[in-house]
Length: 79
Length: 252
Image (cartoon, rainbow over all chains, first blue to last red; front, side, top):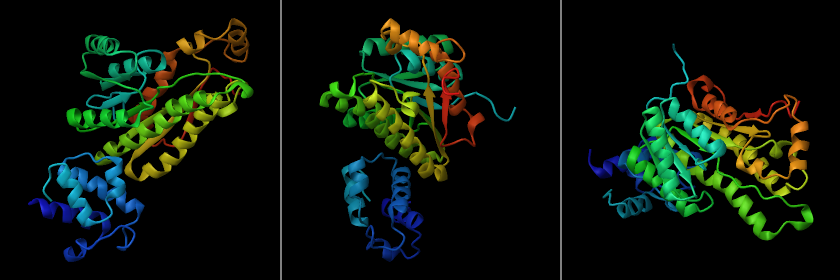
């Protein structure tokens, strides 16, 4: 599995979104289903998929799919 | 036997584990087969000595992390090291604490900051980080060491009591939040236990406390460790959000 699919799959699994094109526009508090509970599930999915441990600051600031990509990039993961 | 006290293959972190209840808990967990990560602030040499003792006595791999629970950056570093070395955490014993007594009019801002940071904020920092590591495996046990003072209070211990009562509140809220992830959160409220903190009490105070224990004796750190072992093991698989008094009957 390539890295972008891993990130999309994590988002789909955590947020229950079926359409991959919706994922890239996903935003915390805007996208249906992306509440605080789903957010922690998303963090767990991403950490497992990319074998990283995110800082609390990163957890809090991960408010969109694009932001998730930036954060993973800072961990040396090209998503 | 379906369920045992065995902790073979489990990774445990015990904060404040170079002496007293923390050390007794670390020993109990290692004896049950867990890999124990020891933590303390009294020097790398002491921690290393404790690690070697557990490895020699129980044949388990152990590790150590030097640093205070009251420093958030240090706590984060601790979990980064656990993640890097073990990739998981199964058991957290939130034990590190300090005792500072003063009557209400004598409480300083420094005392409030230091007691709340170590005894309460430190437990929150660790619980926050531990629960995220445990969440990956959808299992874990977090054991918060509170105190009988957090349940009934005591003159001269307003700050300590507030911190320890806070630990109970933390336990109850976290238990509710983490139950769906199969992470159990429980607290132990020790009574009068023979630790260095208690040995430092004035004789009159010591005797007064002793007289309030129905079983007529001071508890031993190992007796708290027995309760830690219960909460850490599969024997308490369906137990969460509980506060277990281990106090020789001080509260009955």
